[in-house]
Image (cartoon, rainbow, N blue to C red):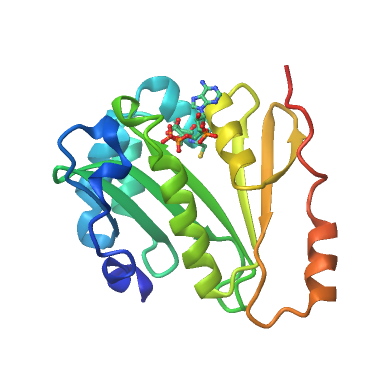
Length: 203
Ligand SMILES: CC(C)(COP(=O)(O)OP(=O)(O)OC[C@H]1O[C@@H](n2cnc3c(N)ncnc32)[C@H](O)[C@@H]1OP(=O)(O)O)[C@@H](O)C(=O)NCCC(=O)NCCS
């Protein structure tokens, strides 16, 4: 499936001049596949405890992270990674939410960027890569979840135009993607079904 082919989706190196914080360059964005599981796990394990909680919505230990990366369903998951001088430093995961037997309409996106590389634009780059992949796959609706005190994710969701709503202490953001064949009236109906436009965030 796509998981094994996605190396070619964004195979080209990304110009280092776009990311001056990574001094020295060597920034590369590419799709990950099953063979990358160890690097994926290592990246997730380098997240701070706070960022692990932000990413997985609960405290998660090294063994659980390894199990998560090792057993990812690559037939369904579309994962992109940002490598800095050959080491995986940021990951975006696009996971379809619908029954695999049915046409996929919705997917959840998650992002993780290691602390020293945050605020370099990697989160946004991964988000845009996942949006492009989702459009190519015909996915119409992207969901993202974050804790209400996660200002960085809130900024990222706002930047990509997510409509947000509060579900207890968790925020849900939804981005509607125009389909290749979605008539304007259907797109409007789908958008109306999404949460209300971004309101001032919680305190
Ligand atoms: C959330 C996260 C993915 C953002 O990644 P990032 O690479 O730092 O994001 P970017 O550099 O692309 O910046 C995104 C925006 O957040 C803004 N931002 C960064 N820190 C901020 C802060 N403390 N308060 C408010 N906004 C902030 C940036 O200015 C940027 O907005 P701009 O482009 O309009 O200036 C990263 O912080 C992370 O991995 N956190 C831990 C895991 C997590 O929370 N994942 C999200 C849930 S799945």
